[in-house]
Amino acid sequence: MTFAGTSVSEEDTTNGGALVFVTSPASIDGVRKSSATLAQMHDQHSGPADAMGMMIGTKSTSVVEEVPTGSRIVFTPASPDDIAALCLRVARSIHRR
Image (cartoon, rainbow, N blue to C red; front, side):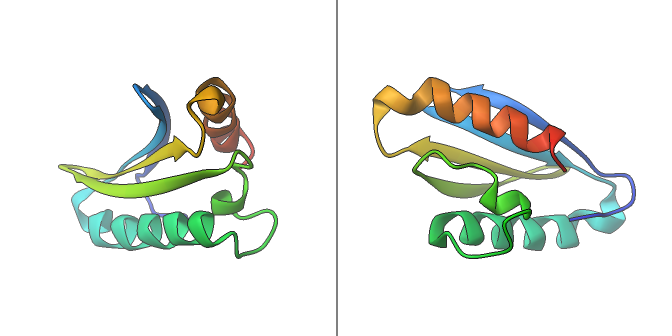
């Protein structure tokens, strides 16, 4: 996903990790649509190996949330024992783009 003026960051959550996409007003709709596609790709484990939605290998589910300046994808591992591994994978995914 590439939109002018967009940045991505990682957040640890209580139950996993999140990717937060912040963008300009002109790109909000595109970023939100792409975030939904990324989350769907992740949940269905379907897509190109180098796609951002495929880079988080820890078994988990995702939920997309709208934030005022973009979107947030929250990842929750299938097992609570995998929270630390999931957070690490989420953080690494933004550096592999």
